[in-house]
Structures are given as structure tokens and as C-alpha cells.
Image (cartoon, rainbow, N blue to C red; front, side, top):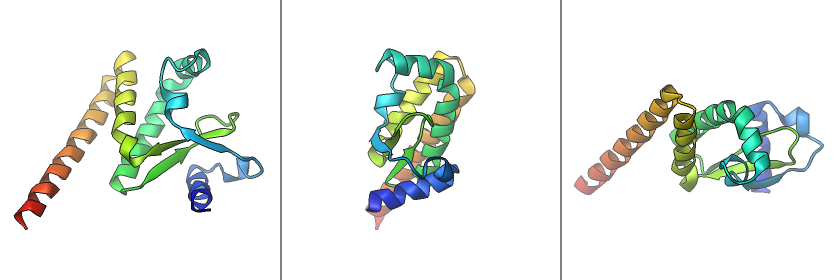
Length: 135
């Protein structure tokens, strides 16, 4: 039940609740649809939509990290009956995949944004650890 409530909250955030309110969606790991080389269909989808998808999901991951969210659930394509889930412990792994995507298409601005965000988060974590050790 908690999963369902969380998912509905995410749908409202994305403005998609009305679009799929009568559909049942499976929640699957993000790697199924966002890792290049998973299948020809995924590669074709990413070739056409990869930049938009990775830009939007990266932004959502940044927000989830800032808000210390356990996971995010996102609908990648409205015609697929699955929604992807990125767990908190996978945020950096996803950002690495997105960074490689942007490097491949030579979007160095997005690569830099991801790198800067990851670096800032590492500095925050290290600073918090040092403060805890001092106390």
C-alpha cells in the first residue's frame, strides 16, 4: 500500500495521474529501459529520446538526492505498462550512465552539470563525516 501511495504521489508530480488512472503499471528497475545495449528496442528508444529522457531523469535524481528520497518512480513512455524505479543507493550509478550518454553525444554541458553535482554531494558527505567525528 505504501508503494501505491508513493507512486500516485509521483504521478501527480509528473502531471500524469489522469492519463493512466485506469491502468495498472508494473514497477521495474530502471536498468531495463535506460541501459544502452539492453535490447534493440531500448537502443532505438534511447537513440530517438535519450537526451530528453536522461535530462529529465537526471534533474529528478538531483531533486531526490537533495530531498533525501528513498527512491523515485518514473514513467518513461506513456505506451509502456511499466514505470521505472531508481532506488537511493542507485542514484550515483544512474548519474554515471546518464553522464556517459551525454559524453557519447558530446553534450559536455550536461556532463559538467552531473559531475559538479556529484562532486558537491561527495564534499557534503565528507564534511558531515568530519563533523560527526569531531563531536
